[in-house]
Length: 436
Image (tube, rainbow, N blue to C red; front, side):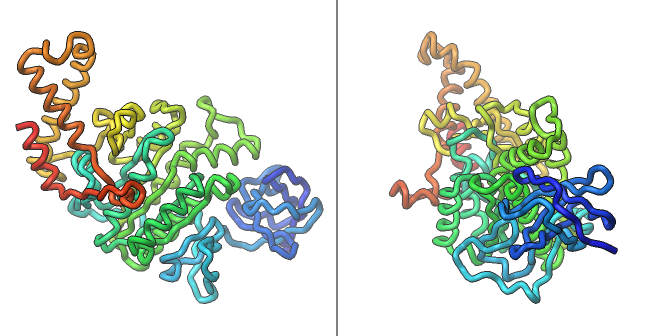
């Protein structure tokens, strides 16, 4: 069988390779016959004999009529304990300045082959993982094996909140942490790396970065690579995993850019026609089974602060809890800038958080909604003109809003202000003092 093809079309990151026989599979890796062995990812097949490929490394040395060889396998990453404590790109090349790994004797996994074992979900008792952050532990409890999202526009504190979560939850949890940096700023990646290093959390963390300076092909694949390593540790090492992704909207954005360069017709909302399967194929792998759990925290950028954006809605639909960060709250100087009325969780049930927590949440939500309805009236006639009952509830709600503000541990060096950390019991006690 002839496993050679010839490059017929070169258009930016899209390479079309023609085969006389031995047509490759979708997601197979081809290698250009050049010194770099440039990897090309088969995205689709057309005309029966042509593979439409993506130039993962954006190698500009490829030429028309250059021969290409099949590898017979998809894009692979090495998996194993050697990956812990390191930072990698999409092609599992170290980018932390440390020596490259010797992967000769390491097991390799294809990133587009989800573990079949992940289809077998193990029934487990809900286990709440305390974050030490009052507003999160009260409104959106972080439950082992479930998914939580931080939704917000630019500059409202998504990455800082994620860093605080990693710092508080990873420490002492006994779980391994996987971090996928998708299309975010290089500066933020450096800050996170330094934060984890200073907190001595790198020894239990593997990091993958495809930041905004990378081409869209690499940015669209980085989360899949990180999930593949998480699946390995869950299934083979039988470990509990904390999976952090910053930012899931950038994943959709990168997939949209790839869709554009391969000339796919966009959907009605302007996104790629495959947006639903792009989200589902990734989210469906972030699950727990009888071997271990994957607990996921994902940030979601909101373009133009529009929460109705179809990509934001699609990702949020896959989550158990959503924390909505608000620019209006941030402008009041409250950090974390959580919109208490828009943040939701389907994990806030008596069976998971207990009767006391559940009933307190019901009362707090009622007070906050009453506060919203009275706010316009207060702006016109003043708080003193409210009825005694309304004035009391309005004051309680104002005190609650201030109570959920908190200084972060990861910002201590930047602000000089000591960070705060609260147990769930301390949070509930504080709320009872305000509303009872």
